[in-house]
View 1 (tube, one colour):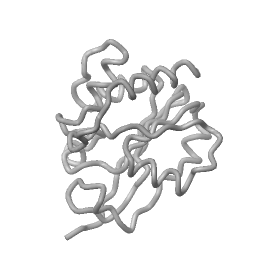
View 2: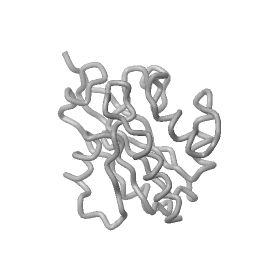
View 3: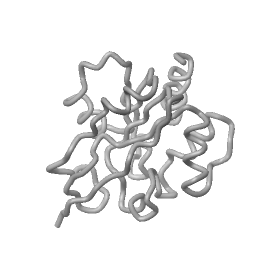
View 4: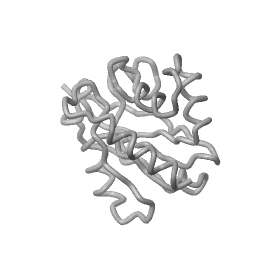
Length: 161
């Protein structure tokens, strides 16, 4: 049975140039109270590897890493009914209000982490002028993950800044 869950606040600062939007925090992420908390999720390995750094450990180091690289992080769904961690069970959801975040930093590129994040973003923000791209989910459940696509998108994002 699903129950209403709340996501996390966005992480960003005035210097943020890239916004990465996921769908909704997994059970393991909710347990550690920060994004991509499942050690099997590829997110932290891929992003830190792109910058030639080791994977940050602990929530504070992860926050510092993201902000030092001008990356904002949030989920497109801020509250929903969900069973476990499966995006396919998300229902009765609230969509992130991106306006405030976008008014308080200079985002020039948006990465959507997975098909669910992309679909919800498209349905609600599809006419946005900021360039955006759908990438394969970094979730360990995604067997079609492609690190090169992530590296290419990150390269594009940081060429724009």
